[in-house]
Amino acid sequence: MSDVLNSIEDEKQPSIMVPIGDMDTADNAPDTVDELAMELATIKQPAKRIAIIGSRNLAITHQQMIETLTTALVRQGNTIITSGGSCGTNAAAIRGAMKSNPDKLKVILPQTIGQQPSDVQDQLIGVPNIVEHSDRAMMTLADASRVCNREIIDDCNQLICFLSHTSKTLHTAVEYAEENHKVVTVFYLD
Image (cartoon, rainbow, N blue to C red; front, side, top):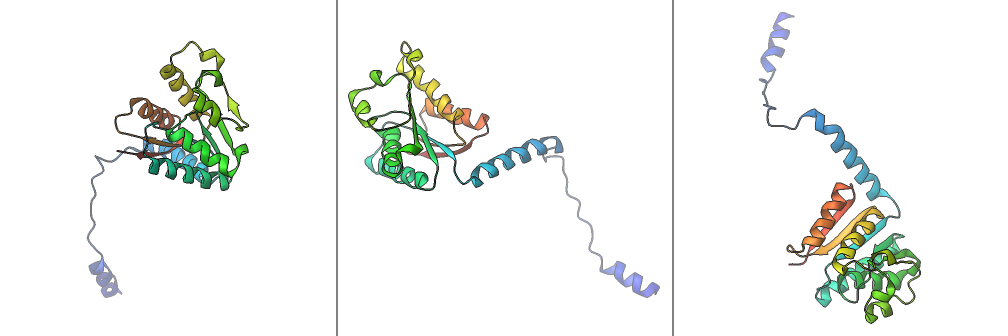
């Protein structure tokens, strides 16, 4: 019997010691696990509220991709939240959602419809769910747009943003979404 025990001990592998000094502490684990669980739950939802924002200056091919993506997202039952825009990301998102199901589109304007250029006003014809902000009428468009981006992000589960590396306003919006535990997808166009 002792010969059997000795041969088992001889077959044991030597222990390997792994230093843990550089590893994250267990105190951070619950927050990370909770955040990952929330993101997974959001991703698994059959229908989400997806915000699409981004640059106004886009090549036509990028606009076509955004329009196609938006059409597909709406067909899957998602609601798209964006802002007004005669060109670029917001315009492409509006076109895509309107092709698929206008009732699944929410457009939040930085100010009022009357303050939008005529081409934006034309594009918004037929959009059933438009939110205007007359209280921002005296703000600059840049300031009203920053507030609008936050409102759009507050209303969504997920943010999809199309931007360049130099776009400070959109980077700020992405950071705000991440701080508020939204699922964030960023497409850099440069």
